[in-house]
Length: 472
Image 1 (tube, one colour):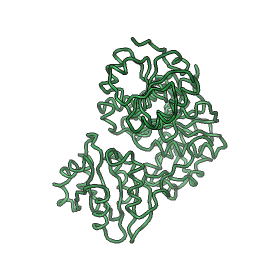
Image 2 (cartoon, one colour):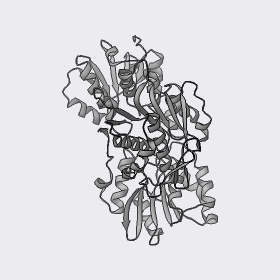
Image 3 (cartoon, helix red, strand yellow):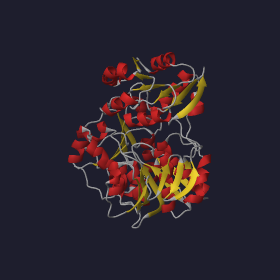
Image 4 (cartoon, helix red, strand yellow):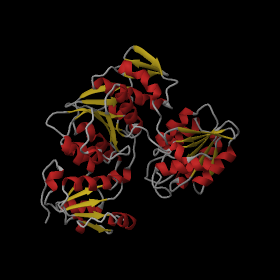
């Protein structure tokens, strides 16, 4: 029989309990290190795959048991399971164990519970959104550092929070996926600022439904009750939000920071031209508006800091121009995992002949809106690939002839690049913007982007790193 735990759960609360780790990626490693640092004598059980089991066994930890099979009955034997973010609490195994009293918690919740106070977590900004959260987080950290603050950039962007458990910084910028946003509320923490960039359907297989995805995503502002919620007024779902426990600061319209063409405005005051900023696409410059709003919420002079964004280094795999080969520009937008992201990418190259590569892991997202856009604003060619490639191809096939674009089906990314190159005249663009996850052939979108760079004739190592992660 499991023993109930307090809410929120701190690491010290796990002393003397039956505790398991579920997952052995970056977050699983960080959770193990944090628990061992605070509770060195605590017996732990790790659930992972056979390859990971060999890696974990090499640690030589006599108090770590390793199992490669997991089911609800086994999980129910633990008081608490610290699970990796990618494991959905809606799996049958997790649901059964929860019903038996097992507590499931993520590393994000543990970190926030350690840091949470009765009042607001000052100089802490949490960032989420279907798209743009990594760029927004990185740019916010960059400008906070430009303001002279020792700033941490961590979370979903690549540095697990538990790896910074005992570190101190003047400001914290924490990127959160939809798998992690509820963890903030569970922890009892109230960040000073929470940013939500936009909402579109994604990760429906993890959340179970579009409605549940939105609810989980918005838990950062509806349940965690930040002091200031920075919201995109141009997003209809966000524009309808009412948050009685938080001050809302809008961006994207005349009430705050917004764009008029390429011109950046703060309310009615022109601030600067953004055309030369290293932020490709209007949606990326909209992220700058979110960042400047957050800086103001921190009490900083955002107008003075705005020009410093010119020195920001764009993130890889996000509308990343790799360079030209034989007169053709190759653009890596491997981070694109929704059809809406693909449409946004196409807007950037509307005046050039483009072949776009779409398709990947099928999460059941609808492509009808993408197909409708192809009626009036089709690129030169669309090449479909991946698990949902045939579904996208069937949807576009009736439109290709009438709308004047070439439609090709590829066996894999290598075949897709070859077909794209054959379809392009000199001076065109091959755009990898799949609108779908990479799972299957690739471990993640980074690996997919690296392969694309290699196929295009570029050094994968030169395009992969994200600058500024950790504390600086």
